[in-house]
Image 1 (tube, rainbow, N blue to C red):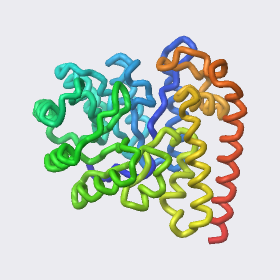
Image 2: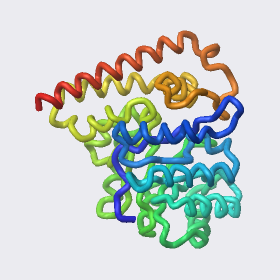
Image 3: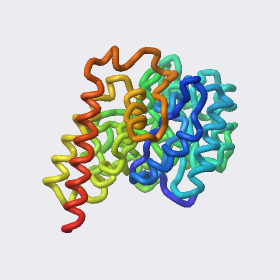
Length: 313
C-alpha cells in the first residue's frame, strides 16, 4: 500500500432498486458524488452499506465494483465481515481481499462474539491473521451491530504490534479515548479515524487522522473544509461544527433510508429501498421531509460561507 488511508472517508450506502437488487448504475453515480465532494478514501461494504443484509456473493461483487470504478483515484477499504463462525470469516475476508481493496476491515465484535474478553479476542485474531493474505493491509472497525465492542488499550497495542493494521474506525465517541489511541498509534502505520460527529473537529485537532461518520453521506466536503481549513478560520469553524453536530443527530430518523432519501432528491439514484429498515420512515418519523429540508438548506448555506471565505483568503 503506497498511500495512507486517512482524511474524510465516507461509509458507503448501497442503493437498491425497488425490486431489492443492487442498483449498480446508482452506485456508480454515488461513487462519483463522493469523489466530487471531497472524499479522501471510500469505505465499502460497511454497516452503512447494509453488509449484514447482503449475501457473500453480493458483498464480494460490491467490493469489486467499487474498487473497479474508483480505479485508483483514492484508496478503497472493504469489510463485509459479518460472521461469528471463524471459517465463515476467513471466507468473507478473503473475498474482500480479492476485490483489490487497499485494506480489508475486521469488525471487532466478531472477534469476541460472546463478550468473553481480551484472551478470546486476541486468540481469535491470531487464528484469523494466520489464514489471511500476509501482505494485505488490515483495518479495525468497532461496528455497533450486533454490539459495540470497543478495543482495550492492550488489544489495540497488540494489533499495532503486528504491523499489519493501517486503520482504526474509532467508535468510542469519547475524545479522551481518541487522544489515548492516537498516542498509542504514534509512529506506527495505523491511522485512528473517528466516526462520531459530536467530537469530529476536536478529535481531528487532537490527532485523529480524519472523519468517517455516517454524515459523510450528506456533506463530506464540509468535514473536509473543517479538517483542512478550520484552524485558520476559527469563527466559521465553530459555526460549521455546530451545524454538523446538530445535523448528525437526525441519524436516528431512519438512517440509512434517510441518506437514501437525500440522494434520491439529488438524483443519485431512484429508490430509498433498504434491507436494513422494514418500515416507512415518513410514517414513523413525522415531518421527516421538513427535517431534511433544513439539512439541505443548512448544507448549502454553509457551503456558500466556506466558498466566500476561501475566495477572500
